[in-house]
Amino acid sequence: MAPNTSASLPAENVNPKALDHQGSMEHDETQLWAELSVDSWKNSVMSKESVFYDLYIDTRRRLFEACQKHSYDVVVEVGCGTGEVIGHLEGTGKPRIGVDINPDFVTHCREAYKSDTEHIEFHVADAMKLDEWWVSMGYDKKYKAPLLVCPNNTIMIMPEEIRDTVIDKMRVVAGLEGRIVVTFWNGRMFAHGVLGYYKKNSDLCGEFDLSKDHVDWESRKIETLSSYKSQWHTAEEVARWMSSVLIPVTIVEPELKETHEADHVAEYGMGVYLWLKGISPENSSSGSARDYYDSKDSQTFYRTVWGENNTHVGRHDLVEQDPELSEADLLTKIRKAQELQEDCLINTIKGHYGDTKVRCLDMGCGFGGLLRNMHEANMIWTAVGVDISGEMIDAAARLSKDMDALTFYRESYMNTSVPDEAIDLCISMEAFLHVGPGNHEAVLREAWRVLRPGGRLIFTDIMALPSSPPEAQILYDRIGLQSFQTVEGYFEVGRRLGFGEFAFEDHSENVSTHYGTVLQALEQLWEKKEIDIAEESKNRMADGLTKWRDLAPSCLQWGIVSMRKLEETEESKLE
Image 1 (cartoon, rainbow, N blue to C red):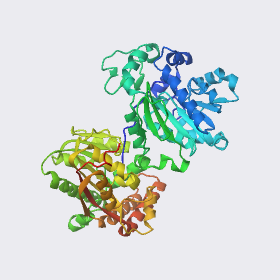
Image 2 (cartoon, helix red, strand yellow):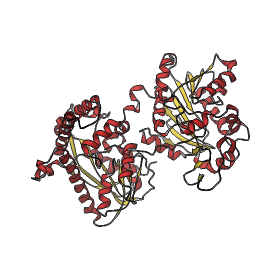
Image 3 (tube, one colour):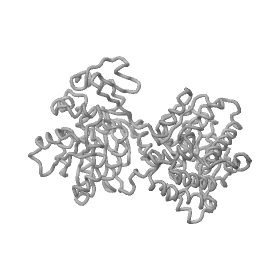
Image 4 (cartoon, rainbow, N blue to C red):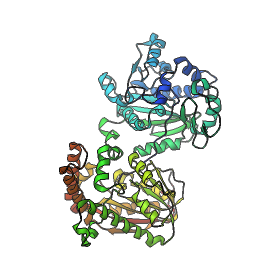
C-alpha cells in the first residue's frame, strides 16, 4: 500500500524557461516557448506597466537580502530566460550562474551581460540532470553553499511528471549548506493576470475569450487558441504538493516582507514563494516510497502478484481454515486473504456505524479496492481516496469510474484538500508506517482536522513489538526509517490530540505468512517467466520479502487500530 499522495500541480506554460528532461522541446507548450522571440517575452513581463514588474523587483530584493544574511557562495538560476533575475543581482557580490534549456536565451544572456563575464556565466543545461551537470562542471568542488533560484513559474512550464525530480535535483545541488527558492504566480491574483496580462499580450499568449472554453475561474486555468496553457496556485496548493513528496513546509502570513528561515511558502503580491533547505545526495527523494510505488517493476509486481484491487496484508489464517481455499494456488490465496481482511475491517466499521452511510477518507488508498468494496456494500455516502503514487491514483480512478460517489487525488494524507470536519470516517491499510513515528502526529492531526466530532479513525498498520530485538532495524532500513510505531505509540499520540475509545484487534501471525506466500508466488512466476520485471528488481524484492517473512514473528505487530475524535485539546488546536 502506497503511503500518501498529493495532486502534483498541473502544467503551467507561462514562461520560456522550461528545462525538458530529454534536453529537447518535445512538449507542445515547451515548443511554443522555444519559438518565442527574446524581445517579445522580455517586453511583456519587464515593462513597468506589466503586472509582473513588482514581482520581479521583489524577487530580486529577497535574493539580495538572503545573500547579505547568509554565507551563500554562488547564486544559480534554473531556467534563467532573459536573465531578468540573475542578471540584476550584481550587488550581492556573489558569483552567478544561469542555466536554461533554450540556447537562444542563453545566447541572449551571454551577449546582454558580456561586460560582467568575470562574475556571471550562462549555460545550456538539463534540469533533470542538474546534479550530474553540476559535478561535471566541477562546481561541486568549487562551491559549498549555493542558493538555487527557479523564479516566476518556471517550474510549472515543465512537464508534470518531472517537477518532483527537478525540485529534488535543485535541493541536492544546494547541499546541506545551501537553499532553494521557487516562485509561482499567485492563484488569488488570477483574474488580475487574465485581464492585465493575457488579454494585453494576446500576440504572445494567443487569442481567447472569457467563456468557460478558455478560462476556468474556479480552478484558475486558462487555455488560448494557440495551445498556451496556464494555471495559477495558492500557497495552500504549493504546500500540499510539497507534502506529497514528504517535504513539510509552513505557510506564513501573506504579504510578509521578511523571509523566514525555516522551509515555508508565502504569498506576496503576484507571487507565491517557496523556500526549502538543501539536502545531501543520499537523502534525495529518488528512493522514496512514492518513487518505489510508481516504478514500472513495482507496479507490475503488485498487479501480477497482489492483484490490481488491493496491496495489503491479508488474513491467511482464515484462508487456511477454509478447506477449499487451503488447497488453492498461491495467487488465489493472496488475493482471497486480502478480501477476507477487508471483510473484517468492514465488519469493524459496521459495528460502529451500522447501516448508516458515511462520508469517508481513505488515507493511502492504493488501488482504491477498500472504498469500492465499501461502496458495493452500500456503506458510502461520499468518499475521497488519497495516495502518494500517481500510478495507483490513476488506476483507482479508472477502476472506480462507474462509482460517482468515489473521488481520488494524488495528495499527501498528512495534508489533504478535504475541508475541516467534513468526514465521518477515516480509514487506512498499511500506509502510515511509510512516514515513520516522527510524522504520525501529523497523520493523526490531519485525521482529527477532517473528522467531524465523534468521527472515527480505523486503520491497519505494521507496527513494532515493544520488545523488538535489534534485528528489527533491518526492516526499518528497508523503507528508510529509524523505527516503526507501536500500538501504544499510536494511542499516546491520539490521546494528546483528543482521541479516545482506543482499541486494537491483533492478527500479527498473518504478517510472516503473508510475505512468505508472496515470496513463493514471486519465485514461481519468475521461474515460469510469467512476470515481466528486471532480474535486479526481482532479486531485491525477494530479499526484502525474505526479511519480512523471517523477522516478523519476533519484531512486528499487525491488526486493526481504532480511535474516536472526542474532546479538543491544546495540542489538537495547534496549526
